[in-house]
Amino acid sequence: MTIIEFKDVSLRYRISRTKPKTFQEYLLGLLKGNVYGIEDFWALKDISFVIKRGTHTGIIGQNGAGKSTLLKVIAGVIKPTEGLVRINGNVAPLIELGTGFDMDLTGEENVYLNGSILGLSRREITKKFDEIIDFSELKDFIYSPLRTYSSGMIARLAFSIAINIDADILIVDEALSVGDESFRKKCKTRINEEINKGTTLIFVSHNMSDVINFCDEALWLHQGRLLYRGDSELVSRHYMLFNNQRPFEDVNEGYKYKQYIDRLFVNGVANGEILNGKRYFIPERQATRAEFMIFLARIKGISKHYKGRRIFEDVDENHWAFNYASWLYENGYAMPIKTDDGRLFLKPDDFITYDETRKIIENENKDFDRSKINFQADKPLTRGELAMILTECFQIKDGLMHKGS
Image (cartoon, rainbow, N blue to C red):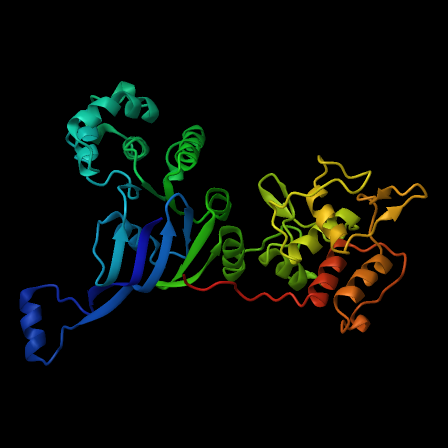
């Protein structure tokens, strides 16, 4: 069921080109022939998409791309200049936390004030009051005027109110930066609880890891337009490279295989390894047979949810390549070792050689130009060399995926 629909939505602001400081200056300017006109600025232009109930959508883009404006349209804070917007449910907007608060009122009074703005009755607010205060961790300050609060305390109170209104649609705009690390973890846990309840999530962040972790899909806004829409991980990866963010800490600009590794990354083939929050590809490490199969399975578009069966004696259900190994074997891509008694072994942790790779490539692409690669029979491949071979063989490009809705 559709919960949010945008059809050809545009939003225009009128901006003055010049602004006289005084009325006298304005009149003098008119006498001199000056024209004080205005310009049209389109914060959103021709935006169309549909979001289904219960899905989780990330909104990404550079500053000024129109992300916050889009959220305000969804929340009903502003109306579009053109186009159609349909919202089928009540909205909890965790955007511009603290908007609508009165600094002279106490925290308690602002809970009732802000709760009513978000559509709760006084009885509903009273019922949720203790839960709101407990979550905010502001019990000792709740009867003090808001002007005595720090900006972080205000944001925590606002988050606690918005997250407790039992909304159909939860809008989160960088709200996870609220408070200290402990409180941020608490916010993430609560958002996950809402997701698990089936709440529709609209999530804006500059942190691509959060977008990937929280969202199924992503909308990429650029200069007020919807540039691309698709799987959150793939769109986020393209966005990173578009903004010249280095995906792997150990693959520098001048590295000979960088363009191939980037193509595997941006198309969801190479994930690398995460260490202390940073991603590494380890390009000079020799590639194992299991790593080769994982890359190949992702290139062939095998879903990470594919359920395989036991084929190899040395690859059981707990092995990280189990499902992929099953599919690749059944489709002629795996390289099994068969014993005299008919048992199959994969030796997934052995290094893959040029010769083994060549056999797969020649079966897949008869026109592949082998002169691009210096095959050396039994020599193990490095991960960087493997990235180059797979990219060339399967003609993996670095173009973007699915535009619009």
